[in-house]
Amino acid sequence: MTLTEARDLLREELLAVAAAAVPGQQGVVTHDVGPVNPHVLEDGDGPQSVCLITVENGDPAVVDPVGQVEAAVATLTERGWQAEVQPVESGHHRASASRDGYGIVVHGWDGDWRVTLSGQTPEIVS
Image (cartoon, helix red, strand yellow):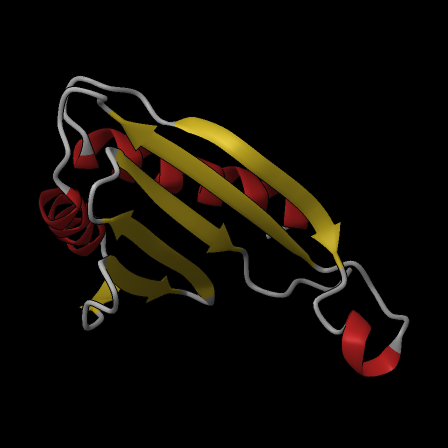
């Protein structure tokens, strides 16, 4: 798989999960960086081999971070991801998921109507 194909797959997954987490709404890509070098702090140079994407979704009339994160986890699991809900810390609801070297983190916050999904492709060196 090429890095472009990996990026496209991750983007599709994030948008699908964001849409399922907030019924009736479509997610928006708010950050799409890549390819980048994930080891730049270690060696200062190297191949650009991963893509990072963030998608947000929400309905201003609905503040339900618990429900949004739970719906995202259920959708990720249905789509073949290994998902795990993290303990709530200071009103921050979070889950992480992985599949085939991809990683996704889902964030929701008490009092906020948005859910944020951030993902990274596996490292692919051409």
